[in-house]
Image (cartoon, rainbow, N blue to C red):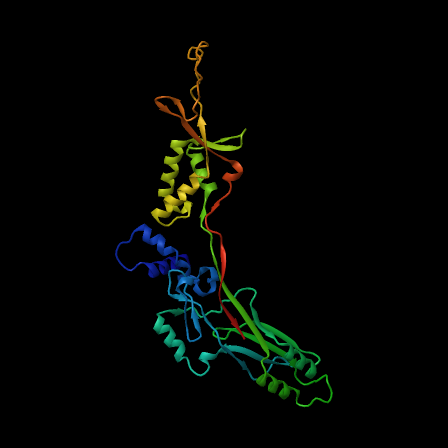
Length: 342
């Protein structure tokens, strides 16, 4: 099984010749699609910037692919003929199917060809979608015809969007005086809307995260930062911190949530600005260097200059509680893309 998976991976991504490790890693982002594509698609996997909509058909591809789910904005209700479920009960299925594909699939195939997209052939809906819920009118009609009945709603097989299962007695009708109850039920189903369907398709923008705890941990392991138990802070020399953290950002930009050189610099600055600066008072005047007691002029100590010819040294520090928090540059935002109702 592992060997087959490896061969499949190579078949998907090796198009002949030599390729760099960087290209192989980039290709790995789409590896899920090559193996169990349809079963693993989530709304968060979709590239909403490439959504196309035409003639009541909506397609959104998976990131870095041209294949993705298709939704239809108009559906019609299809009632299947009654079938025997077991010795005592019968069942009628009510499905919602795309209206644009009722008589032919020409418009569907035209859409695929015109936009050069591939259909994942799945029903992808949020957990709060209403899937073929029976209407109150249907419930009342079933209670009139049958004392005992059962309703089950579920997602259907694509392109049908959902289905309602109506289970009722085969021979014995509880309400006396009602003739041809099954025919009355079929007639009602054929002339009334008996299901409600509603789905609000939304996407969420994932926040950009600077992995501050991991960055600080790396700098601590490299002895750039040290943890002060008494003050509960991470601290280190400013020059070493700036050099090493920038080098880490360039070599491992994913830690800084960046995908370009410009973003790397911006995110590194955000990270470094999260530290406080502290002047290091290394040089204290000796007894011999103390100001003469007869000197009348006041001496002003400049914290930034320890001597006329030397700039003061700095430490950087960050409290442990702050150090353990990732830096979120962009809050996650939920955006409603479209609604489907029936």
